[in-house]
Image 1: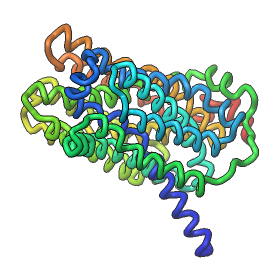
Image 2 (image 1 turned 180 degrees about the vertical axis):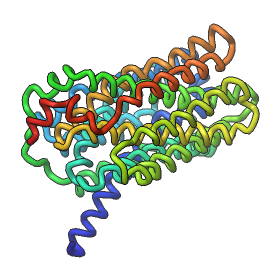
Image 3 (image 1 turned 90 degrees about the horizontal axis):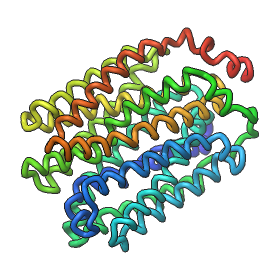
Length: 399
């Protein structure tokens, strides 16, 4: 490999990392500033839940259009346009002063993130066919790392400026940098090889729906933790900065396992043992939050974060493993995220409703413990030897 091609490859890897970095700060910056946002906009607790619920619904609904977007505009143009929408939506949080304006920016950013998440895995598989696991691990790790920075930096910026909106809007800067890198280094689109009815074929396969269900139940835990972990500890008299630090520790733990577990699991095509490990960590974390939240909370955050981050990265790789063709594998990943994020949108609101009914967050954490148990039972079906059997038409079409 020439020096020029090597530097171009490194630049593309940096682009992958920065794009992933910008997909979660808009969510994790909300929790530590929840009290200020509520005071400034008049949003109720369930209204605050909309700031998570609506983006997650959009991430789901728009993901179903991923194959169509690539066919109509191309993956590169779709990515750059989506990153511009994310940047603009975050910047518009600075003048936001009402609950509805905050909800509108959440919808706008969620729309951009939805397109990125639907299109990007296919690009990664196309550009890094021999290193899909490590590259998806990098993408997932920087996604979680961005979440960590969102939790830590938002209260710091808000305190320094005396303005909670500035704590949210500051993340327009890295989003703008991602637009620039994507415009310069994302490669042009190869000629599309997808069939016109690819989405219909995928949706006719029970495996697609199984992936959706597992992805949704896993990420429902993430959305609830992002929305309510900081407020849950603020109810124990923690301040905004301290509760934000707890969320940041969780996000760093997510990033670490999202990066390392795919590398550790790369030598075997069977990811189930690693998935069960991450689910066990999630179960321990949610049980701790439900039954003994004030006992070693930072240890609980590390354990839960490790389970959530590793599981997210591995399930993304499992979806891509099902099909050898990058376009088809990317379409399957997009549909998994589509149904999964729609399902994952509900738990953050459900935890708020359970809080209103019970006066605490324990019932919500127990709900997620039950979800983890369900996914652990479903994971047994992800045996690589059966991938060709559950996707026979697509395997034949890609040959």
